Each structure stands twice: as C-alpha cells, then as structure tokens.
Image 1: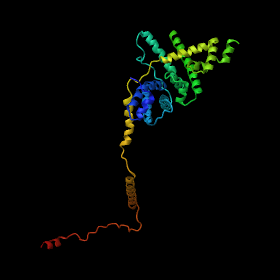
Image 2 (image 1 turned 90 degrees about the horizontal axis):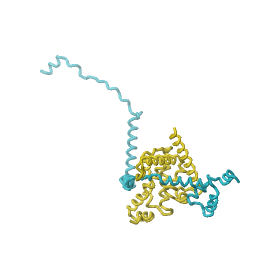
Image 3 (image 1 turned 90 degrees about the vertical axis):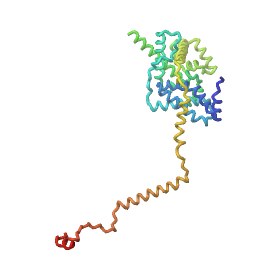
Image 4 (image 1 turned 30 degrees about the vertical axis):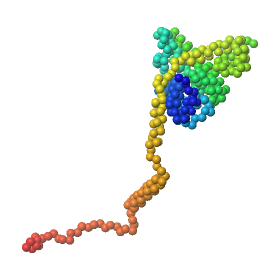
Length: 190
Length: 149
C-alpha cells in the first residue's frame, strides 16, 4: 500500500478525514519516542512526552500551513516539549539500560550478546552525559538523518551553530567513550 | 614544517570540518580542499575514521519503540481535554444580567438586615426589666370556704 506523503495526510485531515492523522501517528511515533527517550532517559516519561507531542500536533493540525516540512514542525514540538519537561525536572535522570530485548538475537552467543549489551549501555550512558544542546543536534543528525539546514530549521538556530554543536558533541562523545573503555579495561585487569 | 607545526596550523584532529566532511556538509570547494589535506595528514584521517566508527555505533544502537499504536490514547486525551468545556452550560448575556442583578440585590438586602440587627438604635427606649407581681394574695382558708358555699 502506498504511503501517503505527510502533506497529503494533513490535507485529508483538514478536509475532514480524521483517520489521516492516525497514519501520521503510526509513521512518527517511534521516531519521536526514540528521540525523546535519549533526551530524558526515562521510558515512562518518554512515553508520556511522546503522547504530549502528538496531542499538540493534533491540536494544531487544523490550522497548520506547509511553510516548512511537517517533520520539522513535528520535531520542533518534540524538542520544545522535552526541554520544558527537563527544565521542570532540573536534572536529567539516568536510567540504566537493563533490558536486552531490543538487541538482535539471531546468531549471537551469550558472551557476545552480553558484550554488545555492555557496549550499547556505555554508549547510551555517554550520550546521556552530553549537554541538552549537544545531544539534540546529534540525535537529529544520527537518528533522523536530518541535514544541517533541516536541523537549523527545526531548532530555529543557524547552520553554523548546528555545525559547531555537532562537532563538539562528537568530540565529547568520543572522549567519554574512550574514558569508559579505559575504565572497563582497568576494572578487568584488577 | 614538522608534524606538530602542521597540526597546530591546521587544527588537525579537532577541526569542525572533519565532522562536516563526514556528514557531506562541506561545499564542493571546501570538500576538495579537505580531501587534498587528508592525503597528507594522518591525524585528520584518524579523526575521520574515529568519527565514522562513532556514527556507525550510534546508528547501530537498539531501536527504541513504543511497542503499540498510540492513536487511541492520543484521541482519548484530546477528547478528555475538549469534553469538560463543551459540557458546561452556556449562559447567554440576556440571562446573566437579570440573574446577576437579583443576586446583587439579595446580597445587599442581607447586608442591610444584618446591619440593622447588629447595631443598637439610640432612639429606642430601653426595655425595662420585667418585675413579676402577684396581684392576688395567697388565698386564705376562710375565703375559699365562702366561695364553695
């Protein structure tokens, strides 16, 4: 079945077809959830904020105009919703990644699975230690594969700022991962 | 120029261009210049390789998913937020004016009556103490006997 473009779904919704919004929800809910999860580091809160974001989208859909791609507007709402929640909390809660059900199961020995799980945990932990501004640009770049211009449009910042924040985020993440690896090696030797 | 001078001059390994080159965000002329630089710079080649590996690991992280369709919950929340407003009685101004006037008059009357009750009137005569007098003296035995006869 052909997937209708975002603008077409919105036009149908504005024309009275309420199910057109459902198609947008199914298309983007996991994208939103993944982004928000890595921003707030809590499954329950990410789920709630994802619903908050979609609710705001629904409420604004009647009057939405295609001045910019829908995806940019969607993630702009997600970013603002997330930052409001983080400011209210005033600190980011780090949730240890303890479930393995998301890891691929085929062809992995228990040892390799445990090793992969640990590496993923380390990387996600390091990701959670970045500043909010660095993390949001990196997530939009790596997970949503947005261009610098798209990220700039979504976050209402300049392309130059996007470029420098992504570079700093990556440099910081590399340093954090290297430090974690050294710590792990040292713990293994003792 | 030695290695350290080269590194300091070109800010090798820490340049934002490495990150932008990885993302394909350098303009064509800048990209060609950087690729020419890469041919002779081990530090920047290692930097590109390091960031490429980081990108690979990030994109290989386990996908995070909600696990079920959120449409029903989003619609339910939307309906819940709308319903309290739509069920409130809609009062018209023509109904509100006499109602508010009656309420104001009632409140004013109540305040006035309360004022009357609480405040003593200096023009009223003080209520005298009531003295109980018995006009009929205790009945004697002889008089009682005469009545019966």
